[in-house]
Amino acid sequence: MYRKIGLFILSLWLFFILTIIITADVSICFSKQCEFIGFGTLLSNNVIPLICVFCLLIGTYSYFDFSFKLKDATQIPFKISKIENIDYEHLTFLTTYIVPLVCFNFVDTRYQLVLIILLVVIGVIYIRTDLFYANPTLALLNYRIYRVDGEFKDGIRENIVLISRKTLEVNQRVDYIKLDNRIYYAKPKSI
Image (tube, rainbow, N blue to C red; front, top):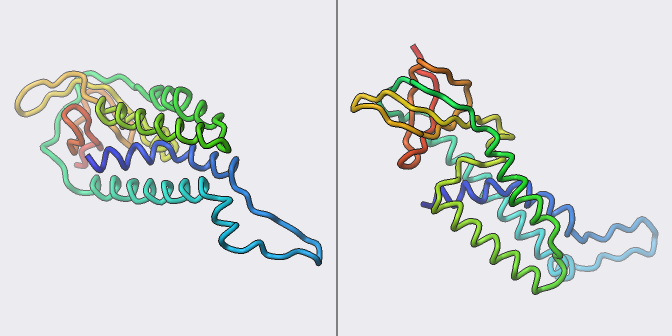
């Protein structure tokens, strides 16, 4: 469960970066009469960017945790019998959630509260519906998404979602790690 939450936060990396750009309030002065406004004022003027930086750090940790988990542990390989590339789902998540959220009014407290509620609701839906594979950040990091049918030792499984850094093909044998009931990380079987 915590990995799914981490992957949700990772999926919002672009949102956090854009929010930092939009909301950061750092005074820059080049004249001789400039004075430092103080850390207290600097921090209080930048609460939202600081929260976004914290979330970026959580996302970074989640990515490395995800990558580390996927290194060595694998199940018995299976053979892909049918494959469909569904990389477009990265773009769907990006255009449906991230782009509209960046247009929020970050100054008004009511809008900030609405934004937090929306992020929590989107996160709950994202986790309960197992949409963590439609992660635009993973797309930027060169991961691909496939919907496959596979021939396993115990029979055929249909409509499995595979996340892979490599291009996969029909009749290819793949090692995998089960991330969820129907979502796996896969890599071509090394010979």
